[in-house]
Amino acid sequence: MNLPPEDKDFELAVEKAIDEIFGKVEAETSKKEIEVIEDDSLKIPLELEPVENEDQKEKEKAKEPTSKVIDFPTIDDIIKPDLEIKQEEIPTQTVIKQEDLERLAAALLSLEWEVNKENALAFLNSLEEIKTKSPEKIHPILDLIYEVGLWLKERPEEARPEWFHFLHQGIVTLNLIILQGKETSHHYEHLRQSFLSLKKTHHKEFFKGDLKERFLRQLILDYQRFTILENLFSRSPKTVSWQKICQKALKEIEETVKLLPPEEQPNFPVIKEKVLANVKRKRQTRKEISPISPPKKIPYSEGYQCIIGEKVYFVPEEQVSYFGPFKPSWRKKINGLFPLRLLLGFWAYFSFVKLKNKFTGNLGQKEEKELRNMALPILKRVPNPQVILILWDGNKGGVVLAEEAQFFILPNEATLVEKEGESIIVINNREFPVLMVK
Image (tube, helix red, strand yellow):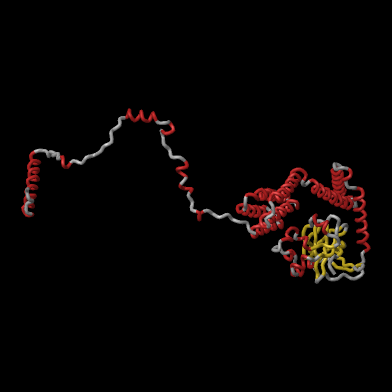
């Protein structure tokens, strides 16, 4: 058995072997090209895959199904990872609160106060905001309200009380369903029937009765004016041409009214007779006027001229606490007294809408509860009033329901006289009885 050499002898043997190897290589490379010496001990075995020729690949592809020729990823493979949302990232459902309905009611209040496209758009935006928070079961109700809101946005000049009444119904329905938990289908069906009735009237005869009444009333007023002018121009030969124009206008009005059914035609001969009699009486009154008391200084400078029947009254501005249009729906609710809460209409059910904000002067300073329970006597009225004036002085008040009323500033030549216990303002020999709370 051969023993290993000593360490020193082993190192020397290794160095000698290295010198012999590398020395021999350097000597050979200087003479000829370096030859690669293959040493089986230095070879690394490699496992190579068999090379497939092109014909073999084509045959294997032909055997596969056509749907697998191009292996596209499926949609599920692509979107599946994106649908894995954490539980805390899923938004919770927003709940409609009472504040949302109150904002919607406030938007409708602004729209009813001034009907224009801006307020209508604000109302629709509030409605859309509620729809984003609401469950799908009340979406049909919101759609009905939205369509009527679009009518107001597109045709604000044609706004009718029936439209606002329907919108009030809609907000009450939302309040019953959302806040009080009432059954949806019953209230929706009731609102839908109201909408269909409103839509049918709107598209066919919605304005028929009201417009015809207003148009006929305007024709009668024009007939009265032309009658007075025709009588005036008949007094001088210099105004004969103007008289003929008035006569032609009267004739055209008479021919226009003949298109109506006989029972709806006004009696123009009677109207003309009353107008001429009134003109004659006023002419005689102007000649015979002799105030019992000398003219007094007028304590007020402006007010409202109100047409009530055949008279024109003057209402001092300092006594007018409210002035606005008269709603036809109020006729059935007044009987000698006018409840002030009627001015709120639908909004009387909302505490945030203040009745006191509608009044000026001392009346607007009273407590809200007292105003809502107050009813004032009607001082003067006409059968079909168009405007309402609420008067207040000290602790007394009254209501005036007139055909027309307009703001009027008294001229310098106006005088105030007392005749038969009544205060009368005289302007260029014309008399205006003073209507006020005493």
